[in-house]
Image (cartoon, rainbow, N blue to C red):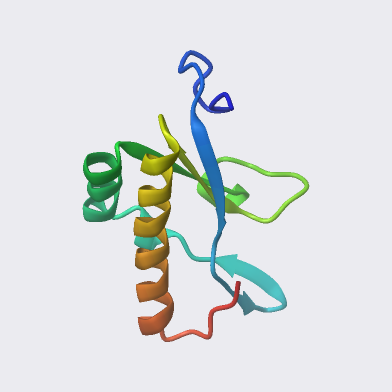
Amino acid sequence: ARDPFDGDSGCRFITVLALPYHFNGGRRVYHAAQLLKANVLARIRNEANSYIKVVGDEFRVPVKFCDPYVLVVGSCYQDVDKAAEIVRGATDNHVQYCSLKLLF
């Protein structure tokens, strides 16, 4: 698939992952800060030769018809699988230690 955020990149492999959220006043509040830390982004870039884009209104990449999500992009499916594993690990760690009850 073509990377929707980089028109000149040629073909890439992608996957989409859900973000955890909690309710605040009846509204979903999505958690992604754990994915945007320098050490997580460096692991995704260096270990998986990939990158992520957090997509959602509160992350400055608006969506109209779906919940916010993480787009994982790499040049081969093995890299995307590895990056997705890193994202899931960081997310699982956040869900485990966050003081709020998080849902998916």
